[in-house]
Image 1: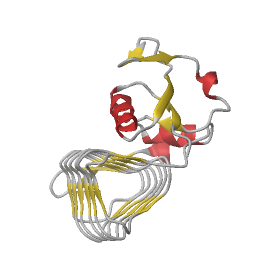
Image 2: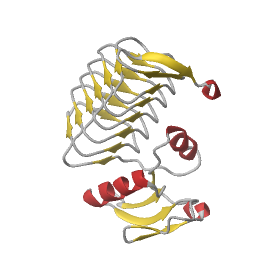
Image 3: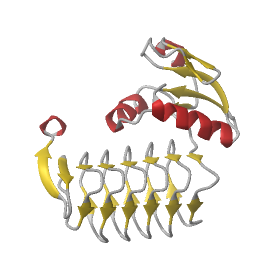
Image 4: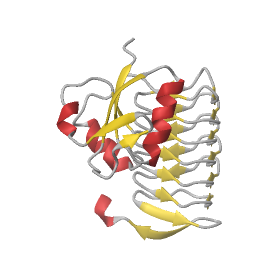
Amino acid sequence: MNKDIYILGAGGHAKVIVELAEETGYNIQGIVDDDHHIEHIFQYEVSHKSDVLMGKQNIFFALGNNRSRQKNSLKYYAPEFNLIHPSSIISKRTEFGVGNAVMAGVVINSSVKIGNHCIINTSACIDHDCEIENFVHISPNASLAGNVKVLEGAQVGIGATIKQNITIGKWAVVGAGAVVIRDVPDNATVVGCPARIINMNLESL
C-alpha cells in the first residue's frame, strides 16, 4: 500500500494528525493550509497554495470542522485508509469507511459502524452496535452507550454522555458535558443535564 500522504489543514488538530500519521508509518509529502501565518508544523513546511493538491492521491483532511471535511471530500482524492492510533482498543467487528482519524485512548466495542471522514477523538468511548455516519466528530472523553446513532455531520462535544438507543440528528451539536437522554433533532444544538435544545442551526436546513 502507498504510505505517502498529503495533509490538508495546519491548525492544532493537524498537529495531532501529523503525529498520528508518523506513529502509524505514513510518509508526509506535504501540508497545505490557506492561513499564511502558519509556516511550519514541526519540521514540515506548510504550503499556502491549495492547487498543489490537485491530482494528488491520499489527501487526509486534518480539519476539525465537519463541513470543511465534507466540502473538501468532493474536491480532492481522499485516502482509502484510516489513521488509527496504536493505543486505541477497537473490536475486530468494527466496520470502518475511509479517511477516519481515531486518536489515542479510544475504545470502540463490538459491532460499531463508522462512516467516512470522522474524528473519534482522544479517549472517546463508543459502545456496542453504535452507528456513526460520515463527517461526524466524537470529541475527547465523550461516551456513547449501546445502539446510539450519530447522523451525518453531527458533533458530540467533549465529555458528553449519550444514553443508549438515542439518535443524534444530522449536523446537530451536543455541547460539552451534556447528558443526552432523548433524541436530538437535525440541526439542533443541545446543552445541559439533561440536554435541552438552545438553538436550531437554520443555515444547515
